Length: 159
Image (cartoon, rainbow, N blue to C red; front, top):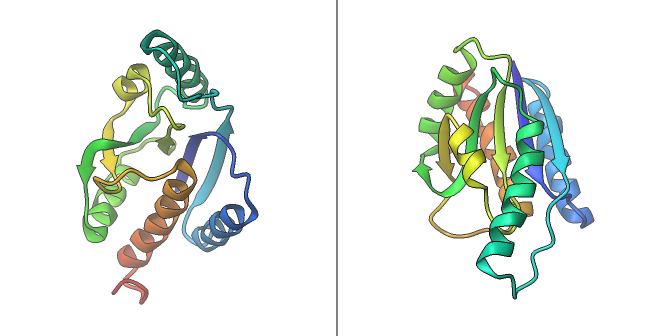
């Protein structure tokens, strides 16, 4: 089973890297996980709408370049579908059984995902209606993927 997390930006702080690394290590028991980080666009507070759209487009092009044409793509976005952990586990099970070479989860930078990335997505997932920094969203996604595999294998962890 192959999973990918394709994200804009790097985890600069050690505590985010440590948390992500811990869940990546735990997930290695269940799936091959590839983490791809593409450069994020600078997003100063005073971008015009045109500058914002151009920055999202450039970032989106880099994200799309990291996704294969036959992969199942899950875009993390606030307007996506919310799932309980059990529902996400069932979705993940179906996606992995779908014959795709990889299931790729895409996390945008501070500006969000470009329309092109959203159009490429096979599924839009929301971790919450709340807005989170992309570093925290990455750790939360890794934890939920680990939880999903524990649920699918009937192993204790999920409460």
